[in-house]
Image (cartoon, rainbow, N blue to C red; front, side, top):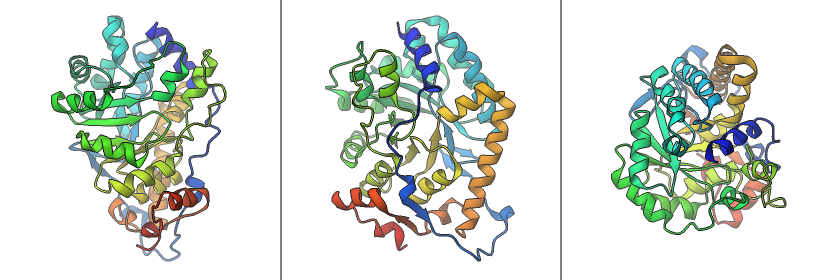
Length: 347
């Protein structure tokens, strides 16, 4: 059952239209510097994440595993991650514990990428024993625990009770041999949820905002129950600003419809540590192979460095000190929530 669902999710993720909800980054503007007095050779967007260096502040976010096609996909993604010097997260590993023949589709990631940042992935309701086995399975540097309440409720066969999740995450934090990152899967994270997760000790927050891959729409294509709820969620830019407004020191991964260098630069300038991208990379890999994805990655790196230069910054630390203007519906949301966007505009 779980492996069949994984295959359906993989096929639909590359074919179902993106969320009808915008990410909100069209409301976010970086300030162009006409005289940056910089050479592109001086611009370095490398960063540290979980004790390792990334050449780009980028994570190939959780997508798949545990099914026949997933081994080739994860091998290709891991090759690109190793070559580009970026992080990679695997899809939920519970399927490999239930159906052992799926193990290699996960283990291939570490074998191909022995020195890079690799994240394990389980549900936030998973017991500590299986979660630790998931970490050990791929010698992971961190553990993503995913939060997907709307998706579960949209599935006819999904979970209906979500009680005790925070206590379980606290137990995972205590027992995991690596840092735990709480990950939303496309519905966004509010500042209240971020605060509760921080209280139980998670090491990072992957906000997974709406505007990208829409798992309610995917479940609806599988006969789900949420036909009129495809717009549910918090847009990615809004979620990022909500979380940063109350957790300014948190390690934050911005993800959810961030499918280009400009929105990535906006997220990083606002305060995200790194950016997570999933479905676009999968689409390129499936259509153009590893070489095609590497070309796309090289272009992404060039454009991100170019944007960094065009605001007059040499590195990510300087980028995060540059003015960012938040306008439109995103600014209206922040105002109604009592969040002062002038903090970012006047620095």
